[in-house]
Structures are given as C-alpha cells and as structure tokens.
Amino acid sequence: MFQKDSSLTIGLRNQLIQLLKEKKIKDESVLSAINSIPRHIFLDSAFTNMAYEDKALQIGSGQTISQPYTVAFQTELLQINPREKVLEIGTGSGYQACVLAAMGAKVFTLERQKPLYDKTSKIIEHLGFATKIKMFFKDGFEGLPTYAPFDKIIITCAAPTIPDTLVKQLKIGGIMVIPLETKNAQQVMIRLTKLDEVNNQIEKFGDFAFVPMLEGLEKK
Ligand code: SAH
Image 1 (tube, rainbow, N blue to C red):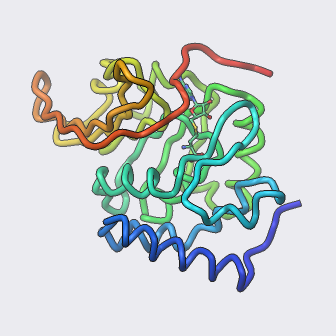
Image 2: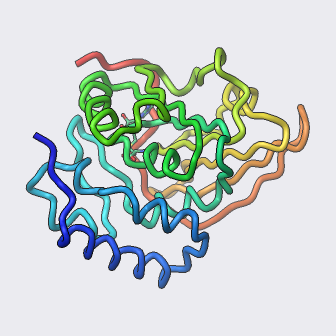
C-alpha cells in the first residue's frame, strides 16, 4: 500500500535540497530534516515523479500538501530546538508534522477533516512517527488548551486574523508563524513572538498561497 524510498527518490530529494539552498533556505537542521522525509510517501503514487518538484500538490478532500519551499520557510522561521512542544494547525498530509518531528520537536497537530485525519494517521504510523506526533480531529481555532502552553505554533492554512485563542496558548518568548489573509488573493507570512502577556513582536515576510482556515469540523 505504501510506496518505498529508492535511489531515484533519494536522488530527487537531494536535488530538492540544492534548490531550497538556492532559494536561500540556510538552516541546516531544516534542510537535513527535509532530506530525511520521503515526501512521495504522503502522495498518491501517480505523483511520485512530481513529489520532489517545488510545488504544492493535491492530497484529496480539496486540500494540498504545501510546496517544499513554503514548508522550509515556515519551519526556518519557527527556530525549532529539540524537545520543544509545537502545535500545528492543519495536519493535511502530515508532511510538515514529520519535518518538525525529524527536528526533535514534540508535535501536536490538528485537522478539521475526518477523511484526511484518518488517512494521515496511517502514514504517520507507517513512517514510525506515531510516538512523536499526536494527532487530533479538532478545530484549530480552539487550539489545544489541555496541552498548552506551546513553545511554537505553526498555522498551515490561511488565517483571517491572528487567532487570539492560539496566542494565549503560546509560552512567553514563544513563536507563532501564520499565513495571514490580505486584501489580494495571497497571504503575507507573519512571525509573532510573544514578549509578555500583552505585547507581541510582529514581523512580516513575503507572499504565499494557502488553502483557507475554516471553522468547525467536517466528518465526511
Ligand atoms: N501542513 C499540511 C498542509 C495542509 S493544507 C501538510 O504538510 O500537508 C491545510 C490543512 O488545514 C487542510 O488539510 C485543511 O483541512 C486544514 N484546516 C483548515 N482549517 C482548519 C482548522 N480550523 N482546524 C484544523 N485544520 C484546518
């Protein structure tokens, strides 16, 4: 059922790492985590040859696996240290969660679409990440108060505003990375650093394209 890693896919992945370096991804721990995760396994076998192109691809349920550059960029902004608790909103294929786990993070990831949640649970188990990644079928707007506070929070869908509920679940000194909707079709990448209970530092990075962050659960 699951595809295998081969000399072909390992070679394609090395080329992807070179491309990410050319696109100015510098953090070696991010590059080596991406190099360790076989992206084609998260995709339908029809996409194997495209899996290491720098493109977003369909994963079913109308959703996409983010483009490798976007995964690398968001992960680099998070400045992950081993053993940090990281909350991800938008599990999707599970690829981003595995990249974070490969960097030594303890990942808690939320998905609002049940079919994706079910499919991705099996992939994460198959890749041996089930102890490092806890998955929840849950609306990301609520976050995960029982496991808070988190060192880092990553949103991988386009948020309409910076969700206050999630800022509350971030540690002081913690970082949250958010693709925030703007008036045009794209989103601007925001890095929020929580300075204290009332003050946040906000930095803006380039334009990206994400599927929308939606409220409520979808069971089918
Ligand atoms: N990180 C993913 C990217 C998936 S695309 C990956 O590596 O593949 C974004 C995902 O966010 C979709 O699966 C979508 O269903 C999910 N999503 C959208 N709104 C959400 C919400 N409110 N709570 C949880 N997940 C949400």
